[in-house]
Length: 361
Image (cartoon, rainbow, N blue to C red; front, side, top):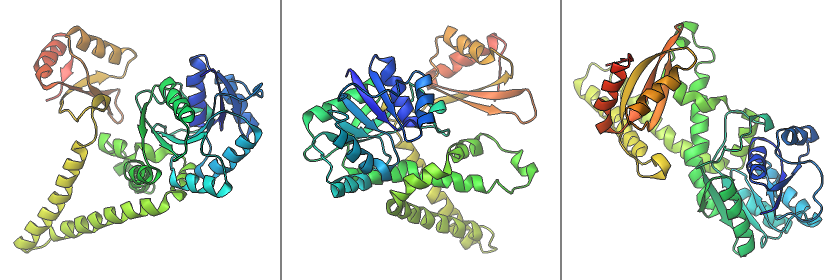
């Protein structure tokens, strides 16, 4: 790929442009908001000039409801030899494209499974898609050239391609992306008017659960509008679990021992199914989930402390598989939880204690 056009310079579009530009591809930026395109260009994502001729690939990075319109305009103008989009749903845009009579021989739907809580070009990163899944949804007549152009795009962005039918994709993202976004927002909404004393008790559990609740509501309304029915179906299933859990919790307050036992069973069953579901999430590098053990270390809030901790772990010959930080409210310290292979725990613990680190537990 020698040239590409990116239409839409938000977080996703600009991140793609940065990745392509870093690999020597000439990138031409377009956006209805010229200031956004200029901002992306100032970051090194490409140029706002018009391309001298058809580019190798045009990436349409606009909301799902606009994909067909932008594709039709781009094809009519002969912008590229092949086209793809990055919309987070695939069935709606495919139907709109068919309704507009757009060519599908040089088009392939796409969706990079990467993002961030922040939006806009200033939040973009060239490595946003490194190691992430990138769904491709070819039409029945999508050409080999268009497919190969999309595959090259995925490779240049460091992502992993997965081919899926549009309907299967939309059901999948409703389950693993769209519903979690709403549930995170619902949990975080409970904090909006909560007593300040309660909020100050927030720990890693609530921080992890509500991380994506910081996302842009307007952007998410556009995404959810294009997949509303499927997301509602998943939420119906969640609502059934909520009703069962609420009933179980009420029963736990009963004076009747049998009702309490039934309530405990109902709550435990939901949590057991949660355990099973959590265990199916792919682990490191997409491999089957691996059980690691955790070692929690007290760390001061000073520059260089994390680097020193990781350096000491490296000196001990231990590979850190994952890391989490728990901040202490009102104190200049926190806890870093290192996830490592079970056999490495005693080695790492001994090495860190020898170097003066305090280990919890």
